Image (cartoon, rainbow, N blue to C red; front, side, top):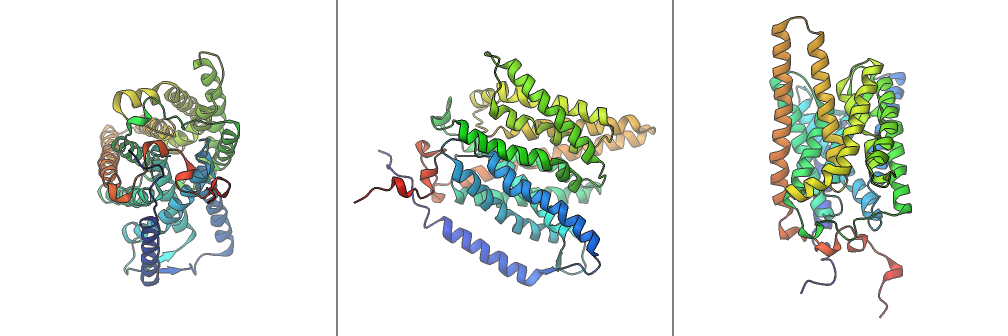
Length: 408
């Protein structure tokens, strides 16, 4: 008979977290310096404002967006913060060592360094969304370290081979597919067809909508932090507006009762921002069209694809990150590729451009799939004390609830 209570993580989670944190402190002591003497006050204020927008999205938006499960609110916000805080530190080191051209091993911290680190952390949070509610904090810490490592190495590999960066495409596609493959390895038969605790109510749905609104409001800043063309903020806003209208309309249209599904809408209204940030058209009607197509695919994905992935491939994507990030991300990347090819007049240059960018996409997809499978087997190891099926999507496995304590 299975034990009544979830296994205690006292011998796993605190030692791992403390060892990692102390190790990072030591590495920062030897290799990291702070300050940029050439950065003026005005430049600092502008970059800090951008950092604050991304900061709110990573630590507030993604955390509350994941709180839609009725019995998993503490873990949604708390574990998201834990993963992001650890991932930011690790990403700062990896970005400094692999992606910064410096004659010495010293890493200089600037606002851009922190923004880049939080972009890596957001990629880890996307991967976390696919296994949301089915893993303990020890597994999530290991998963985030593996994901950030793979994400940065993928960026370094692309930069070395093609002399370009594709952080915004990799952010959505790499993180999502990594998480989806990890979820496939960690598949639990108890989730078929749906776990009894995998549900939401009016309160949890409202908190999740709160996170969605923060992401929706700050997504233009998020895209402009990743793309050198700052006018992308205009197109992102228009695309998000179109996504909102489209997601609500398609959700009601595809429902047998003609009613909208809040969980579908919470993710789908962000799909336009994902696709537009990658496409970078700088043409308003194109951005709006891409937002329309992205929201359409995302909403239909929530309605039909998510269940099909579970039954046909045993992939349980809790937060539907495949629909919100991977599919719109690939759509935006293909739109970017098509628009640039149309504008190129030289056939040789166009062919080379197409081959390079298709190879970038294939490398990103391949690395995310392979590393996701490897990470899944790593964190599935019983040494990390995974909780029982009936304790999935339940805060009581990890958090103290004094009013529920048994009095002796």
